[in-house]
Amino acid sequence: MSKRASFGGRGAVVAAALSILAACGSSSGDGGSGDDGGPGDGADGGMGAGSGAPTTCIVGTRGCLCDSTGGCEPGLTCKPQPSPRPDLCCDGDDCTSAGGSVGETCSAPSGAPSCTPGITIPEAIGDNDNCGYLASSFVESTTLCAINAVGGGSEPAIIQVFYNDEHALTLGCGTADFPVSQLSTSPDKVFYPETGDPACIDEVGRPLRPGVFITDISVDPDCKAGDLQEGGPSYDPVALFGTWKGAVEGADHTGTPEADPAANHWDLTPQADPVPDTALECGEKYGSELRFEVGLISGHSYRIQVIAHDGDQNKGGDSGEACAIFCAGTGELCEPGVTECVDDPDGALCPDGTECVQGCCLDVVE
Image 1: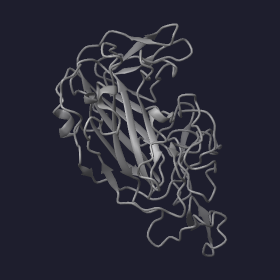
Image 2 (image 1 turned 45 degrees about the vertical axis):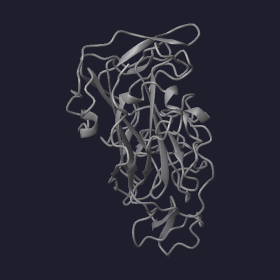
Image 3 (image 1 turned 120 degrees about the vertical axis):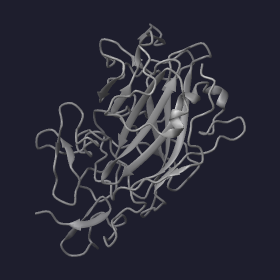
Image 4 (image 1 turned 180 degrees about the horizontal axis):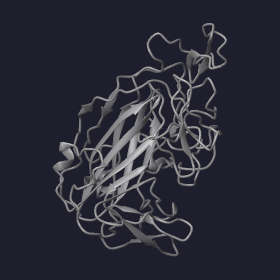
């Protein structure tokens, strides 16, 4: 187990401001969402992509934003939409929402919340880690060396997580029905990685595959409804850079990690994001970047919890967690000068020639 200080960036606020409104649907369906293949109840109801109510969505799935490379999950293509609407992932001409909404909340926001754009890393207090849980329950949180988030609104919210440890990241338990993306060389990269059987756990019941858990805290800053500990849905990375390994699943769904690959340190391939200085302070043999992308509503505040596992079982499950607070987009729902219509989703009060799209009055597309 690593002996380093806990993950870097505590107390820092990193500027993160890209765009405007979330233009993606949240009706339930297949692909890329929670552990059971669906998103749970979600934080934002079940409106479709053309609805007036703002919604979240799972980047890369049908009806949601294309990812930051202009791609979508396998089988879908990124299709331009009439300006100012963002490009969406579509199955041919079918761009209706299918991926589901993102995260949970304790109390649905009314009106259009606002916040100061950026990411804040909470401090660990007393015996608790920076997620507010006993640090002794996650003995490998030091593997999560840095976390950053940018974007939101009409751009994907990109969550970058940098992992470093004496053991390679465990990507999941591969089975015939749930394969794990293989590492072909060290380092390597994979987009939309396969993360194995979602039922596979360590000996204390935590998932072996990495995931991000999201809670909308715009109304209640203390809400943890989307956390792993509260049964929140887990979302898979859209990309992985560096090294990783799989695990073998037993009859009781407990996973046994495979051997570590060749060491790569912080060589993550050219396609990875730059490694933050705080992460470079972590000097173990194995480094990885997990890139998660989700559609989050501009102006909403989110609690982000990341879980990762090095595969060891010698401390009762060597899993780590880290949390961050993120204000999505520009900090406001709509661009300056654009009328909000959150409380008027039918657009009856929108100016002539506009319609309510994701809470903002936008020009009607003929």
